[in-house]
Length: 444
Image (cartoon, rainbow, N blue to C red; front, side, top):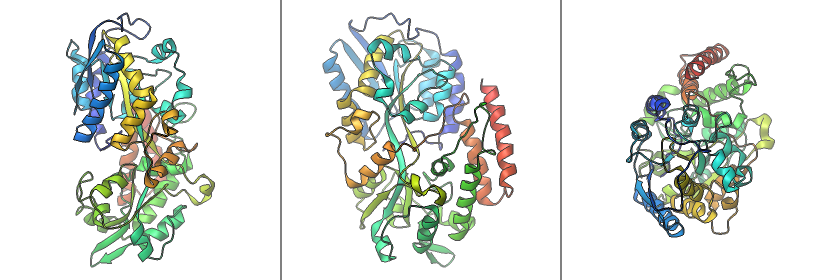
């Protein structure tokens, strides 16, 4: 069950990582002096908790220890960023040496505070050309201002998961490719029932699980920041166009209040009672894991996957989407950084390790070689997301010194727009720009 980079928990994470500026004592990449050939035990902390996930981690660690018999790895799972950050601040022998985090939005702060070691010196001395190993978009969200303080460890691509049986019943023969087609299909698939619904074609509100402003904005290929480093929301028409299109879709499917009442009847996102599984929604904006989860839930309909639609004037770019992922780094306070690098290098760059982990937890591989590996298990539904991950115009939200605070600020504006509290979108974007610039200036 992936939980990579979700803004549903970012506010808590951001509060926690404010302590990291004091957690930066220890070796730096160029000064790491420990001998990785000597017997050593590493503390590795990660956030996975489901049995299948922890089993996959354990299997990867077992392969690593077999290849590095002098390095033992003490694994601690189900660790939140809050707990990780507290341990990094406290330091000591029990603190983690290597960390895997779901929160890509925090990379800017991890790097800016120097809580994680810069991995560029380790990459250089190991002869690893990161540009030839990782897709460009993944390198962008794992570094900040030239500091490669994390590396990608699997990633997620976001697209459309849909009920093919419901499509056929409505006479729809293929998934929508443009936003106007998307709106039309969503309306055809919506079945009102009194003051509620039997089914909605899509839950378009921004509280609808993975339907976040950032996921949708990616389809417009936005630029969050200008060349001067200032927030660019008001100047780039992509943001106003996306907010307007989403607001229009909300209105055509019954309006914000009616949709939100229906959304409040939905089951948990990670349970068998997810509304896509139960047939309450016919299309779901989601990641590569949803189709397999729906199958495991025993849904009685056929499942299809496709890229998210693009604006009508960007039809040639159909196939792109939003990317995010899990990150892995080395604690700056660790006295075992060279040994920790052996673990990080193995888990993030070894093709066999990356493919095995991706197969086990149904995530997209994070290296170019793993994406092309014949050992990667690729169902037709999963292939869609691999293609999104490879698309040259797929994108992510850029790292910033304030972590993901700027995204939360933009998200708050989007909530106001869809609800009707913000009616002047250009003015709202300009005000949001000012707030983002102020927050980033403080973070620096």
